[in-house]
Length: 486
Image 1 (tube, rainbow, N blue to C red):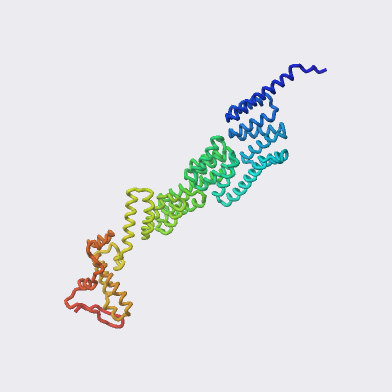
Image 2 (cartoon, rainbow, N blue to C red):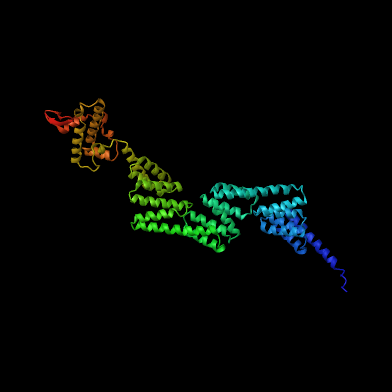
């Protein structure tokens, strides 16, 4: 026969229940005062005393939720409904934990279970709508990520995180998109927050590496990618990024080496290959475009060099080196207005003496380019000697002298007279060393008292050709003239 139950055992069970209730009441008091850590301690004591009471687990779950410890809270909420499947608040809390952690499908099932138990439960109705909203944002973000509309993805994740503040998956997707948008400090901040809570999170390690990679800190980036792959060997994005980072670094270094060795053709090919590795790496690609622009400049392919530098500044508007390179190419191709614009941009960003002088030089060349080009009018080089200038004047003056074109139409006569005057102007300036020096330096000739409006080209012509009896053009045949002194 079984031994009769001792008279003290039921009382002992009752005492345990009363003690557990006392712990719960104390936990409730601390919860009401928002002292959640103490509340947690007393609810834990209640559970340790009576481990089969659903409400104790439910209360501790609520406390953990207030402490932001949703994963632990989820375990307690699930235990509470395992002990009592009709425990409405237990199902609500489980659903809230699932939703906060980003599992909207599981959350929806919990809220639907509440409505089965209490179809008028307004909190469950609202939370079910919230779960549906999160699912909708997830779907939109997935589509927009494929479309590379990263701003829209960030927007969707921000909205989803309002309902799922503890979801690492949403935070990682947001951080990745911020990195792809070039918003590296924000992306780094999100990833660092996750790593503080979970230092082995492969996704967060990948995003940290991605930020460094896009900021052209490739060696450090590779370290983070390797660490991410150590935590998750099948992490596809980390694997691809690591491969791209290593390839990009190698190609860029090979291109730099070829350029330093004077092999511009090979350097051009290597920089071009590097540019095809990863179009998302804006900073590195900006440097590659600028490097290739330098190669093209060396090869005297100046328009191509300008295009490369333009691509560089499109990718990175703060890239001073690319503006300086393009400005020099503009100077070399006599596109002075564009050169001045680039040098102004550089000087506004970095007000150094060197940049100020470059801007001043470009402004002077622009000013000079808007005057008459006396060297071009005479058809001589800027380094022409005094004799070459005289010979050129003799040739051009005779070519455009009005007497030579006396039989031409009024329109032709007017045009030749204009050219004759310009030739005289050019000779007057370039044959005088002082005036030539002022003209070459871009100074205003009017400051010398030379008013070209009152200029008489015939006087210059007479002084040059001289002769006591004057001069005339005589016809020697149809359309042919020779110059004769009197």
